[in-house]
Image (tube, rainbow, N blue to C red; front, side, top):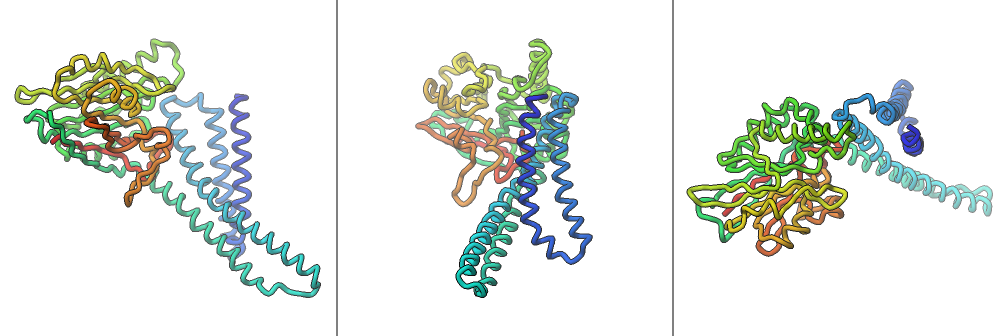
Length: 422
């Protein structure tokens, strides 16, 4: 509790300073209101939101032990949204309030120096000074509205605005029966974050089925941490249809490494239940192994490895073991949750033709318009979203189906990937 308090108190003090300066900035707006009731109402609303958020942080820090661990992710997400929605706009706004105050302070200093020289003079450009200050104030309000609107959309509509991304890939060794094979990839569901919003995900399932996939690949992170997050989802996810088969691998969150467990046996039981759920919804979970896909006596190899990531992420994957049965196959396809695995092992040591990965979520924030492709996650993962190629080897990184931490998506819609082999 002492550690929590030491972390919480400075953070709340900083937030209080931001609130105080923001309120100082909006006072000119309140002064212009002629009706006293509205002035009081806006003041109460402003500080009421602050108190509500402060209380939320205190309850989370000191009361989280009384909350189910699976629900803790949801409550943490609400706090992240509250902070982002009400404080990021304030950060933008107070920059312009500070510029306005500095401008006015500078002008007052100039006027004071002039008055000391000519005691009875009146500044001739007073109106212009006020216009500049007013412009900075109005600009702050307008620009602060942009992150507010973006965050609000991201947490209400953006996280369910599923986007279908399509690629056609050519492989010269592709057996004739596999030409036109349609693979649909989804990744990073994080079922616990959906908070039982079955209807929204059911719409995405329908969209996936509309692509008429031959194969569906799920590249890990079914849950945030706990098998109990899968409760109620089987009727929805079992409706995913593929003519040949549905295959999956585990991601870093599926192992339960981000929680404390009563015993190693409890953690192992949790993992076993997650593995069983894959089977329950009709997915063949590949655990460092190869599945041979056959059409008209022709074959290709589908390899699935357990999670392999750069530390501190776990390295359960054994690519050499997984690919043993793929030797000699004309085309090899790999499912590996973390895209860093491609650079570290796949490119260096294998001739695997196509790798599917996820993990990055595109950080659930970015810009992909008008030729611009940017997300802050690229500074951690150079290969973070979309198609990459080195020689004859391809990597596709799915931007994620669900969300974690921040319960929304801004400029980075949840993705359904469709890859056709030609």
